[in-house]
Image 1 (cartoon, helix red, strand yellow):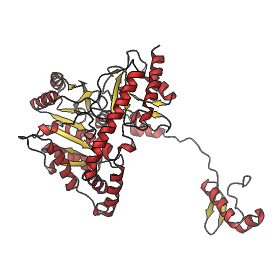
Image 2 (cartoon, rainbow, N blue to C red; image 1 turned 135 degrees about the vertical axis):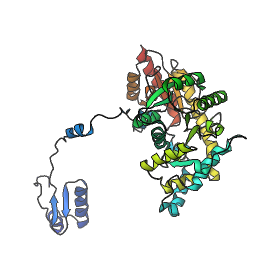
Image 3 (cartoon, rainbow, N blue to C red; image 1 turned 90 degrees about the horizontal axis):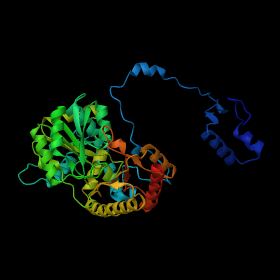
Image 4 (tube, rainbow, N blue to C red; image 1 turned 30 degrees about the horizontal axis):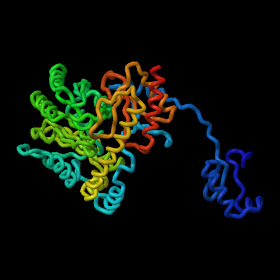
Length: 454
């Protein structure tokens, strides 16, 4: 076999059995192994042959340069939070909770039931399954105070994940080349979606209690923008939660400017020491476009989210969605609805709150002990992340590289700034795997930072 020429025909199985004094079963297993390795190939009715070796040659894609021309917008690279890392690494970079924090039993049972039902074979309405629309509308309506009209199920559009919703909202409500106000720092996926939509991002600085309303009003006036994107509850990456005063004042600014607030409630299920209060619950005149995702809290494999919008804005967004994906898998919608309507869902969320609290507190303690040079602006009251400001002069790129060499993966903070970063930051996720390694991970980061600054 080793010396046979490409295309040479192998002896029959009977001949190989006789030549090597082996059993037919052994010969068949050997042939199967060689076939799996791509060394031989069987041609039915003809025989088995040594596979021809195809010489690899470099591919020439130069013609695509002329065909594609320059991109309409320079797209940021995919975030480091999405990268795969060795299993033995101490991972602080991921944007998703570990598997043990998910309602696995509920998800498996829901998928089994959904696969047996009509949803597995039928096409759902473009705006989503009516039952799931009702659930999203009812959840937001439950936090709506007296005197404010709660949303109707018909105001809901079900999405294949909130990232898809951001792209449609920016395309439909902002438009290519037009300004979009965005909190800074902000979710890297929103920055990416804005670049994809070709909108012009105008950063608005935001602190532990949210943006300063006066600064927001000035940004509207100077830019001519009519849309502001923000995460009022447990912002990614900072963990900030707007105060009640900020919520009211920002909504007043939005109304006065005749503008939209795109409220991304990505961490609605991840409250720790507070509860999320959506700004959308205070608005019934269509100024707030509300995004609510289940992907991180139910399962990363069940990419289901929803937006709630009222008036012509909803119709414009829905038209963009039809061009993008037509509809969301009915199977995934049915499974998501099953999970969140089970009695065990609320039990899971109560347990999740305690688990996130213990992980957050362990990481905060570890950082304060082993990375004294880092500043924690606030201990987040919810969410999944801890935001660290490093000393001025820290070489962020080198620090991230040195930490990785030491077996610790962190996320660079500059990915969350829509313009130039306001300083050197790193984001640490406390919902990942192996929280017992948090102290060791913090020790390595502190050691590498000390070396970085020396």
